Image 1 (cartoon, helix red, strand yellow):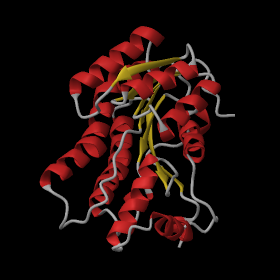
Image 2 (tube, one colour; image 1 turned 30 degrees about the vertical axis):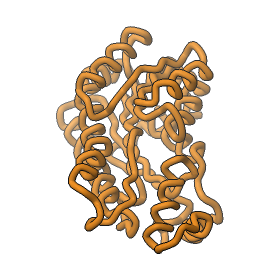
Image 3 (cartoon, rainbow, N blue to C red; image 1 turned 90 degrees about the vertical axis):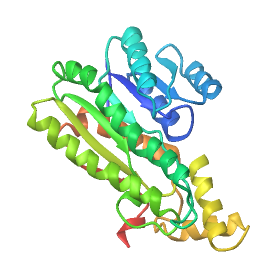
Length: 264
């Protein structure tokens, strides 16, 4: 099922990868989608490919003004917002000793501040539309398996995604306590074959003192018992489920889509 007829979604970091695939599946399921990103040319191209039910708006998730502008544009074009997907994120790939304070601030700005601002500033629109929906509005936060278990490659990335994991649970509880009809859930991908996934292979090779990215990819594959790495469609399907009324009894939950990585 997973129908999203009449729903409006705002997705951050949706010019490419998981975000773009989520936008495509949501439109196929009947939604209208606003794509936010800093990759303007790629974002506009993605919106053009998706047709009249897609809108692109520049969105630096670390900026309050950018969020307000993207939200206003979405509401003006589509009439409201039912779904927020906090998808924008970055991977640093450095250890604690190697990372600079500036690098930490950039990582935390995108992975943590971006989720906070998106949630806070979209809240009024989500709350309003939630009154009309049988199962309320929905927020889906992109966390990671690195938000559930430790990361040898990037402990600072793991720190941010652990924050997203608990922020998801806490915001779900806060909204429920206040009577807001807004469900909040997180999704936890394993290694996905995207630009960010490629960064993890490069970081793994570097940390092993090697330039063999293919060997690093094989090592990553070996940690996934299902026998393959993930693709954006694997995660997008999970996001569409969490955003839909099929997940109407889920809030404060984490959906793990990792090919068995964390089952070991």
